[in-house]
Amino acid sequence: MKIGIDTHTHTLVSGHAYNTLREMAAMAAEKGLEGLAVTDHAPQMPGSTHVYYFQNLRVVPRQMYGIRLLMGVELNIMDENGTVDLPDHVIEELDISIASIHTPCYKGEVTKDAVTGAYVGAMKNPRVDIIGHSDDGRFPADYGILARAAKETGTLLEVNNASLSPKGFRKNTRENAIKMLKECKKYGAMAVLGTDSHVDVSIADYTYAFEVLKAADFPEELVANTSVGKLESVMKRGRRRDRG
Image (cartoon, rainbow, N blue to C red; front, side, top):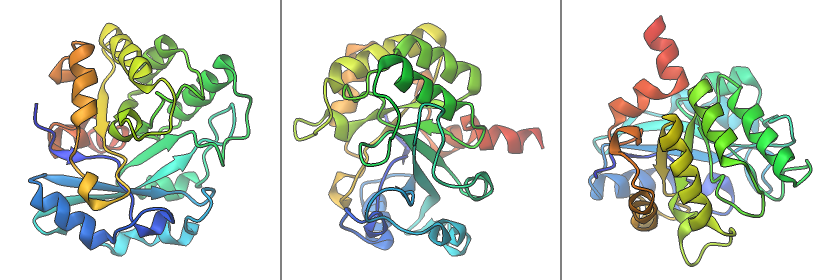
């Protein structure tokens, strides 16, 4: 399987990543990608940037080193309702958005019902395209409910390569990712592969993500980012544009 666009990467703007936008784009081109999504952390992540940064992304060229750039955000899910930390009108103007739970930002209960509700609440936001790293066992979720909600809302569920790395800090990620993929296959929900790169050399490295796809016998047709065109056509914002 060939992945055309890495959908989850971070630059220096996120506060705990190590490369500039140009360095990330150059590496994506060097590795033969068709596109790159730059999804820096939203403002509630300690050390990240201000809302003005995301409002001003319109000035960034969407072609660089011969690849397509999607300039977006990794939103923080703040509570059991799925509240995120940028206004809707700002998210709407971006090219792509991921919503994830992070320990410094999430203030809700950490029970399976509460965490599942937080993810589903975020999915109901028509501006949230992807749920990020829901494989983290520190935040238990019902993957059957997530897959059904993803199918109903047109949200993509992420297989996060960094989560699956032996160097990762999230818990039970391989087991949970396989559970999630099997539920996605059952309900026809689409998955997306993101590296969650915080350094340029990690871009386009799907070593662990491919392994769990194989373990779950997950079909390629349900992988959203095998090309830029496919990704843009299945994201919520892409379908809205298609409807005019």
